[in-house]
Image (cartoon, rainbow, N blue to C red; front, side, top):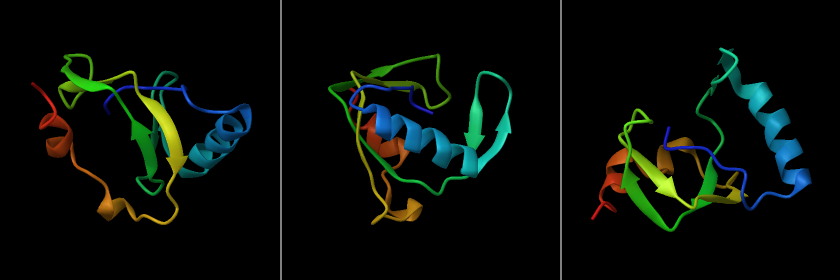
Length: 88
């Protein structure tokens, strides 16, 4: 996990995402909902910073949802190493 964002989402997108992620849910501890890694989401961001808050050790600055990528498989997404390469 690199953070959380609701920026860039319309009410309709947020409602769809909520329903979709409930379909993919494997656990919910009241704060963190874990989902099966099946939905690709395209995220824009302005930068990457080190963060002890998230397991990956980095957080996205000014992250926003662009779109859901049903044309992409989870195996095609960037990795945490790709994101870490943005650190300066």
